[in-house]
Image (cartoon, rainbow, N blue to C red; front, side, top):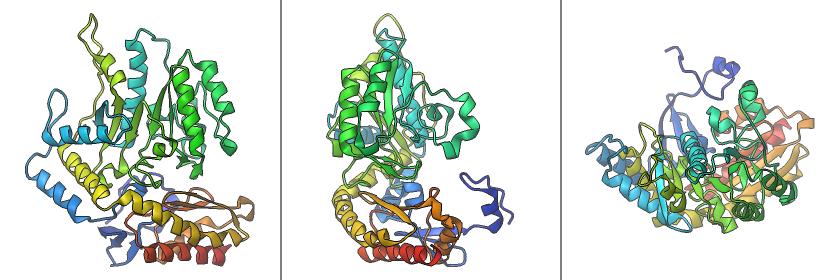
Amino acid sequence: MKNKVFHPYTPFSAIEKGFPNILRGEGIYLFDDTGKRYVDIVSSWWACALGHGHPQVVKAIQQQAGVLQHSITGSLTHPSVLALADRLAGLMPSPDRHTLFASDGCSAVEAALKIAIQYWYNLGRPEKTWVIGMDQGYHGDSLGALGVGFVDGFHKPFEKIVSHPAKLPFPLNGDFTASQKVIEEHKDKLAAVIVEPLCLGSAGMKIYPAEYLKQLAECCAANEVLLIVDEIAMGFGRTGKRFAFNHAHIDPDMVTVGKALTAGYMPMSACIVKDKIYATFSDTGSSDRTFYHGNTYAGHPIGCAAALAALDIYEAEATVERAAEMAEKMRQWMQPMTELDSVKELRFLGMIGVVELKPETKPPVAKIKASLLEQGYLFRPLGHVFYLMPPLVITDEQLRDAVYALQKTLEEFC
């Protein structure tokens, strides 16, 4: 059958070579139509924290599908969405929260940006319309998201139609001084700051310290600027804590989640909002402050069922604690790669292991990726950066084998 798919993030040259045709998943593996097995080392775009085919999540999806397939959350509720909103509020540092649901991470970010701007409008401060992010941050691919997160290598064609009134510089050596200057200079116009916590994923897994995030939260609060923390890629144990912002001991105004929220099994995301913000949207006064924004599948019953099951598993199987333990082992097993001439540096954050190659050595990234695929490992390098972001259920042996495969392949081609 001829391939009629418009593949995202995929060069046409790669399409011509053909792709594995994946038929099923089991644990950390994906299987193609020839029976070949691949280790899903990037958790299917960082989402499948529990691997594939976890019986508890699958059962929850099947049961919900037999009862209620879809029901809108505009002026309606259903049991699963009520339970999930309550559950997410309870995971926050302060539980005074309401949650707006969506179907993908970018949609949750869009909601957060608009909530931030309308919040200040509701308070009679319509001049506060700027929302800014970090240089090379990524928050999705909609035009709104590109206004706060712009990765040069991805988004160049759109630079002339996207406004960037200001950006926070990436904190080299964790220094907060430059970011503080940006916030204080523009505080009268700034509605909110949005950041990927501790790791800029699509920029090449660029990692910064928790202390910077703590200082950012304090600075935003001092200057009447909302802080939105985008946990879509980092949340639910990836960094060794439930959320990456937990490392900084902060209480963000809004938190966006997705991907591992449903263990990657259903498209669902959420924007979790403090009640002090939510309360300003009341129409009990003289004007209508309703938030006229939504998503057809916001609070989708089957997605909610999958999320509730995933949250149960994270707790019952101590996924977060186990991820922290596995992270130390991954760090130890990857350390020998620092001796390779082609390796610029290694970086680590929980169950994220990063190998950045020296661009001046002109590493044959495509050949390395192809060789790993032939060996049964699905890597998706970011430029000269190879990274491991495996399902959190990966075993010691499976993780050690993946690290070894990457090391031997780098030795062969570099």
